[in-house]
Length: 199
Image 1 (cartoon, rainbow, N blue to C red):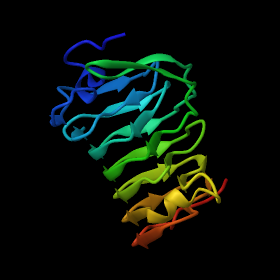
Image 2: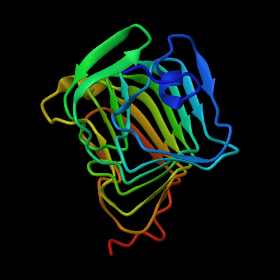
Image 3: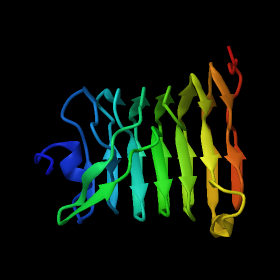
Image 4: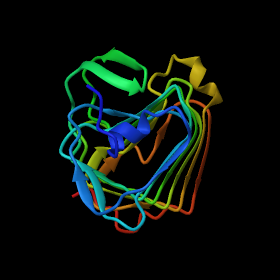
């Protein structure tokens, strides 16, 4: 299935660098995970844009991705099948886990000013040697497994992982993994847990 020009799905699979903006506020329900190609900025400033009630965002084996200003919530596992991940490639994907944002083997990722809650699996997972990740100025609520950095205690490829978690608000209804770090180097600074209540 090829996304229509002018849609978010069409923009993120382009090979050239793109700064993606939104003409108006909207709710985007993804039937399959949104696979983002390298050198993309998704910028929701000036609009109220929700990724909700469907699949989440996947950043896999790419670099230089910025996601700014999205509301990501009520993400669920999506069925597998053929998914277009670039303008000239369609691949088979297994069912997604239901992460809000999944970062897999990717570098130079900045997640900023996001609002995230209530996803089926993690809000943000970074695994398989992903590094140079910044998560900043975001608001997290109503979720169990918030952030996971490194999926396995035995995968030494995550030793190179470097993640900065800064100026975020960990709010009501969170339970654990704020964040959970298995391997690598992590810098957590000026995060706010003031209103964190498990129930």
